[in-house]
Image (cartoon, rainbow, N blue to C red; front, side):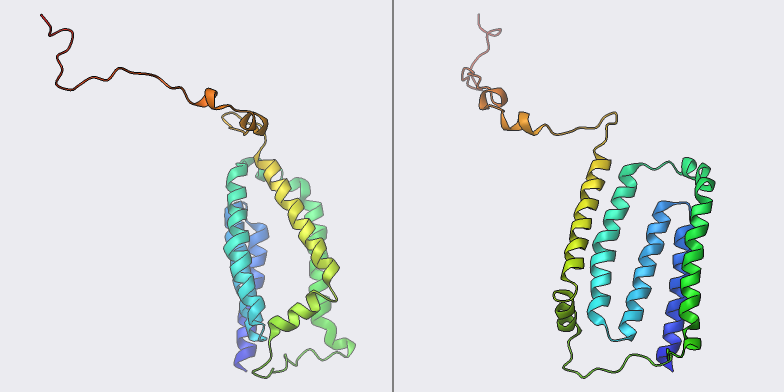
Length: 208
């Protein structure tokens, strides 16, 4: 009974935070709401004894990916007023996507009418069960190609993010690798010979 209550509490928080994330205008606020979505999703995974997935979701996505999201949002210097002015341009597309999402949610809720029992929770596993080992077996055997494809997509996303931050703008300092490699020591260091003087030696002006 307690597990069901916690599930509905976490599910409600997740649904509200996800809805607020796509409705807010400030991208930083949207990133913070996405962090809340990750935490509530990790809590739901803990309820079904998927501890490894919950920890990875918090450490990787909240601790690393969301920090990168915030850095990218701050470096892109997004004009909030311009985004608000162009928001109505994509209203139709956003409505279509929202309709598809609502249809999927309703179809999942009404699966009971198809004769499927969705009231039973996950079966309890013995103490020696390792969901990390089971996840590794499935990931690197049945889903090895999708796993490699996801790695390639992440690489493309990294390259795209770097390309966006390296655009031309006033005051931007860029590296010229060819000039750095072709530099000579004579261009960077200049040896100047200075005559040694003693602190107690009389200066030229004090000499008679």
